[in-house]
Amino acid sequence: MANTEQSKKRARQSEARYAVNKARRSRIRTFLRKVEEAIASGDAAAAEAALKAAQPELARGVTKGVLHKNTVARKMSRLSSRVKGVAKA
Image (cartoon, rainbow, N blue to C red; front, side):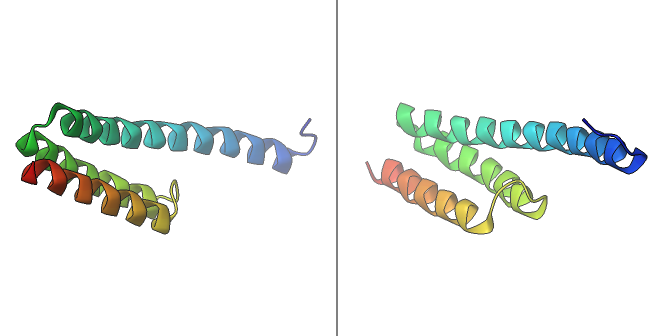
């Protein structure tokens, strides 16, 4: 358990950061789920719109330190290729 004032403060800060990061991750996952659902439904326009909405959220996750930039790059690349596949089909 935290004993010093500094360690108590660091514990409080850690809890606050954890809550903020958890909310950010949840928000990002919601946007990703919307893209996945649009792809599954086969609606190319909806998938395109959902992807456009999700991209800034993913990028924000990188700048805020919630996700690694290569992880986001990989997710964006794979999603965009799948959305293109829906558009062609």
